[in-house]
Length: 439
Image (cartoon, rainbow, N blue to C red; front, side, top):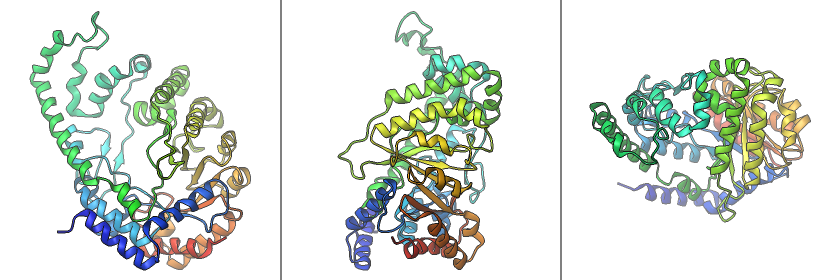
């Protein structure tokens, strides 16, 4: 049986035979094309990115549950998809880190995943739940580690419920006074936790090993990733809304506890800044693209302009500026309608970040931010699902014609993810970029 490295070597030979260039040369071409667009130059053509999500599994005829229970099959499906469609950049699918077995053993309360607590062909879901009560802001901000161990984890994972009985680490008048409290670990409840953690660790180790050096293998095949690890990630406001208070909780807090909410956002930013590591100029792909946050709860649909200015943008702007100063290129996803948010990004340095749009007024985005940052426009997911290849080609052509002039533009295939897209339509979109996107 051929090893993964053996498969990669065979594919490398086929790529070179077909393209007449080495995968290394193709990688450099694709990376330069993207970097030129981000720096507001005209590359040889408009770059195209492929947002994978569950599409590789369906394209390879593999159930969605494989993303959680058969990482080797998932990995192979992703590689097959990228090789079949040949984008300039690929965005790795949503789940390359969570073992379904580990989630089951943990009794995860917020996640719903295929093959676990969902049928095998139903997409992953995240429920909106408050794992922090409204009166617990001070506890979270004063001692976040204690809060995570004794409050958040027991609420988010049923198996870890006994951790709520742990004594507060800073409650003793002695530092490291674990021996006087060690008897709690001999209780039946904590013995169950210990056995579960051992099993979770083993399962997760197997899962991680299966993905192995995926990014390196993709580079050996000539494909750069959409983004790398690094930077300060999502807006602190979104972290509070997504993981701590939930959507309904944070909506209430904006009126009942506005000062606490703002203070929590500042504290999250402070902790992230303290642990952030600058980009390494010696790394391949420098300056590296990293996640720059996502508009969802902070979009026009949910927050007023004043609420965005008050609760979200101050710390998000600091996070984006710090990410740029550390030598990264933040890639921000504008999910939902963000027409009222565009001017804020003029406060970031020119040619140092990228905005990807899924809906909204692209004419307005081009008028305000064209010449200031790279814009990525999407071929809509519904069109890829129900349209014809000809319709997809024409839409992609018109997108490039409207927004590609002068550079600083990319095309992304699938604004809400590919999922149920027809393979012929995905191919039509990518081929259209290569046909009509030449400068």
